[in-house]
Length: 163
Image (tube, rainbow, N blue to C red; front, side, top):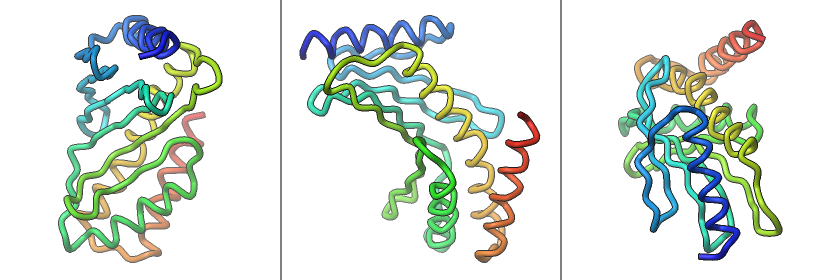
């Protein structure tokens, strides 16, 4: 583990401290894990410093598991959401139906600030909180493409109304 990776992991731990959060810290893997209760569901936040590729990334694992008969429509929802988003994306393991939200930032040629890490974590959690409920509606309902578009439009309208 290089000096910059150690320093970056120390910054990550400081981010959690500054936010008043007490994650489980796994020094050897350079991972901080935290159970978070969002307004819509509970998630597991994994903030990781990846030494081999010099990246800071977050994975937000949801408790949502897509049933086999809903994977195609759920995939359409996730793809349409990803098309609207920037740095944060959603993905689904098509075999298991597990869904997560993620973001990554490269620090190969330098360092990364605490503020950028904090903003990535908070934006990821907010994005998950906004779009996971729509996914939940999709898997519980009987939607086609136009219904999915309407769900996303409503979510985006909610975002704009909060600004």
